[in-house]
Amino acid sequence: MADTIERSELESIAGLLGGLAAQTTRPAERKAYLLERLARLVGADAWVWVVQYLAGTKPAYYAVIDGGWENDRQKLDCLLSAFSPEAEFLLRPVASRRSEHLTFARRDLIEDPDWYRCDFYRKHREPLGLDDLLLSVYPLGSHVQSLIRLHRRAGRAPFGEDECRRTHVVMAAVGWLHRAEVPLEVLPSLDGLPRRAREVLLLLLQGHSRKQVADELKLSEHTVADYSKDLHRRFQVHSRGQLLARFIPPLALLPDTGD
Image 1 (cartoon, helix red, strand yellow):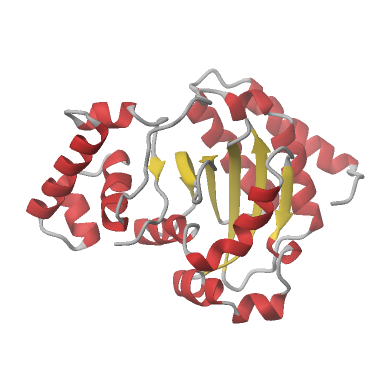
Image 2: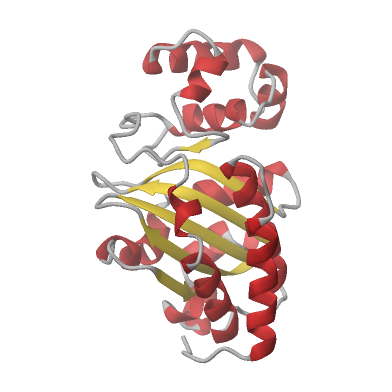
C-alpha cells in the first residue's frame, strides 16, 4: 500500500470516523454503520465483518456483521465458501501473520489469469455473480482476529491500492470497536459440527423461523426441528435465546467440517 493519502481521502475518512463517533448505539450496530459506509467509500457491493478464532486446524467465525447481498442464498454460499479447501490461499497469509494488522486485495495474492482459472473462483465466486475481494485483518490476541471482507460483483474492476489504503487507515483507527464485546477466552467448541447443522444454526441465529429455514435449505420442518434439538443438546441450552447467548451477537458462522 502507498504511504501517502491525498487531502480528499483524508476528508472522506475523517467524515466517516466522525459519523461513527457520533453514534450512541451498541457495538454491533456501530460496526454495521461503519462497514456500510466504508463499503461506499471503496466501492464494495457486499461486505462482512467477523471475529475469527484461529486455534486448531480450522478457523471459526463469530459475530457476523454483513450486508449488500443480492439474496440470502448468495450470502450463505459466500460466507461458507471461506472454509472450502479451495480457499486456503486466502487464509494462509492471515494465519501466518497473526500479530499484524494486514490489508490486502485479491491481486496481492493471485494474478488475474490464475484467479479466473482457479477452483475457488469457478466454484465459489462465478456461480454467485461475485468476483473481486479485499481483506483487512486486525489482531485481537494470539488466536483471535477481527476480519473484514469486501466484495465486488462480476463485471467490475478489481480493488486497487487506493481502496486498500483507505480500508487500512479506517480499520486501524477503530481498535476500540474491533475489541468491543469480544471475549478473548476460549469460545464455544465447534469441532465436528456437520455442514448442514452449521447452515441451520446460521439461519436460526439470523432470526429465521423453522419454516423459513426449511424453505431456504429445502428440508422438512421436522428435519429442521431435529437439527435444532441436536444444536440445543450440543451447546447445552434450552431455547434459541440461550443458543444466541452462547455466541457473540448477532450471528455465528461455523467452519466446514463436512456433511
